Length: 321
Ligand SMILES: [Fe+2]
Ligand SMILES: [Fe+2]
Image (cartoon, rainbow, N blue to C red; front, side, top):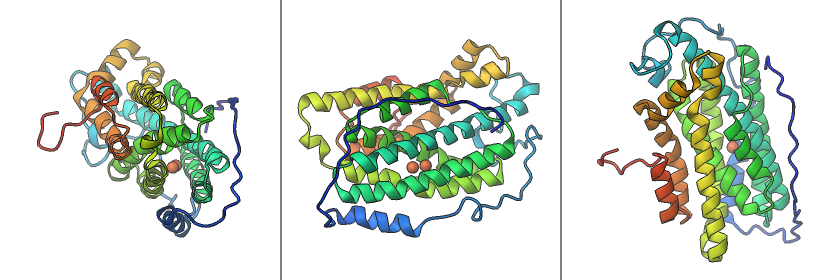
């Protein structure tokens, strides 16, 4: 990246668990591990890096290139003459957040190798570590070519810090595998069809394939957990989910983009939080998280209400949004 962003140290108490029982206990997890081994790809050779990328080049209006952002909404604080610049800035911003989130996944999954109780989990987490290293590699190569990047968004930074500073292994699963990766999976699936750049479409297609397995890993690992928790432990998890949803939805207020473009930040935030297309985008991003929480019986009434207040719930098919 063109901007050096330094480094951050996070302190945490880690309880490293050896497990001397080497027998496979969870066949579905082992099957996922086998799938993961067979689906490895190489960021250097499996992506066609030849298409030229010219930052700031005019983008077409076709909704198939850049999807929701192909047309400028009337209530948008970005002047018409800066709309093309905005689309590039947004692209650089979101791709940078992909990169930083991937590093978070790399570190959190490495933590799971140490802390997860069973060997089946440790095996899968170890294979995920190599997936995440490749994701970091692919997005950093892309941003190097783009020549323009953003530091980590403060809300994403807070979320990743919360995850890697927690000593409870199930919170790492919940925060990373279910929430951060669930959101990433939905965004990558959108980017692989609607990104305006052919290289990013290839990267997000390959990464999304891996992320689908990672979310499945989280759901398998946490299955049944809700019944084992005391009511105190369950309410701690509920609070963690609520705080995470708040942080992850705040991430999309785009303050850094408005600042860089010299657009009134309050007007930009108002637009990002109220524009119907952006609201729909956030709901779509949260849809995977919500279905995973429901499977895990962690979509409690309190969590549901909180998501509703943050306008993150989609109505059932056929219902009104
Ligand atoms: Fe990843
Ligand atoms: Fe992942």
